[in-house]
Image (cartoon, rainbow, N blue to C red; front, side, top):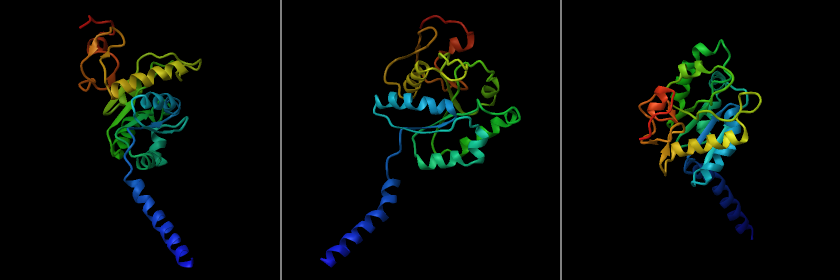
Length: 215
């Protein structure tokens, strides 16, 4: 019986030692969403929309955080290490202080350099506050959801707004049906890689700011 007990302890020890290796071989999630309160609130709706397409999401959202904090505190480096993902979604920039804004482009480039997977920056919907500095600082690919219903603070989307944002994002990342311009209804033939950031509008509507003719 003592021998059986020794074997049990050894088996348990072997299992514990093998656990990190097993975790390391675990398949990555389909997307990792990191960022500020916009990311934190979007996360549950996005996870729900992704589950409908058999996709998995990991979330690390920190209310009131800025791109500079995610760099300085090491949050971004830890998040991408703890949650291997096929694509990293980032929602940061709205909380950048005025002194941080001139260096926001550099902060974005530094975050992009730390990512082991492609990064898609989530630009906020039109807000009551001015976010032109965020678009000007943008590097790499980004996604703009277009106008969404907002809470009374003029910053955070409503439940309906987050649901719509999640649906648009999932449709752009994993297009399994025809995508249409949210302004004119024209079919979007591509994900807008020729543009500086992804949009839910066709090229003509992006340029004209008015509905274009249907294709």
